[in-house]
Length: 344
Ligand code: UDP
Ligand code: GLC
Ligand code: MN
Image (cartoon, rainbow, N blue to C red; front, top):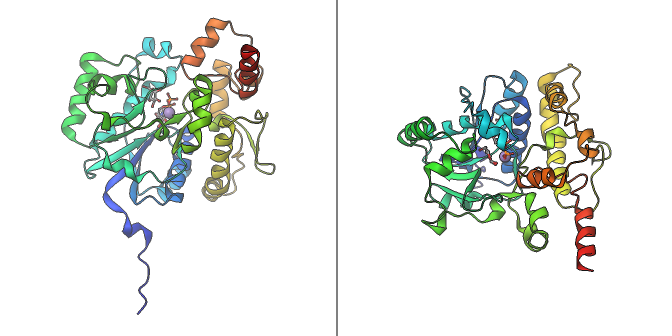
């Protein structure tokens, strides 16, 4: 006799989960795409998202559809403006909120993923790793990047982390500084805790080691849109399936950007439309809130395409902070031209 297939939900291992964080509607868009990408690649794990009180009702409703668990948490902010200024990311104090993930003790093991990541294949094998496994940070490879990490929820660890924050603070003003201080033997103790870079591949690789990116980039399993400019800061033309303002031809990063937008427009926008009902809302432009923020710091997407000239020192600093102007002066084409000229 034929047995009915068990609904997918019941095949999930209930004590292991992918976890992400969104404190506002912009990062919520990222969490939606991440969740959808994990589902599309048939993860057998639960999906959990931590949200802050500023996430709107329609966004919460969409997250409810994509995630098994949507947990409202208080936003923790390091308030460490001095260190955050060194990274030119004053917005990242709230990443302390990530530490709440250790309180999800109804799971035995979790993989945290930033809301600006997207999986391009199934990565359930990460659950074979132990706490704290993570990939090297491209800026300082003896530190791990806290955009993707394997951890074991525990109230004891959570309390110790909070105590660590109180006593030592964070050397970057965000969670990554705390976590690298706390799990300080990561670089030297156990190579099994070093995740391959393909589990947290940021576009910086294109600019810092182009031949390696060409050689290995196709193996990427997780793409991380690290840096100030996130996919949702661009405008998209759904009819043409293009990024408005243009994407440099021949660059690989823009293809991931298009992949993000394609998932967003085909799977997330219909869900958002359902929640926003008749409210006029352009889902393909940066949100008003985002525009206001950008006006203050004067980095609208348009400004990104024709930025005021930077000194070479400023450009180097931006590169090192993952803020390459990959749509403009640091584009793949320009770098290729420079390399060709140099090799000649
Ligand atoms: N985040 C958030 N709200 C914010 C800033 C950050 O929810 O205002 C969360 C989100 O999950 C994000 C993560 O913290 O992916 C880390 O921040 P971000 O990805 O911007 O840092 P980057 O990887 O660019 O250094
Ligand atoms: C990093 C990580 C991000 C973290 C931030 C602040 O660049 O990519 O996940 O939240 O630093 O520490
Ligand atoms: Mn990130």
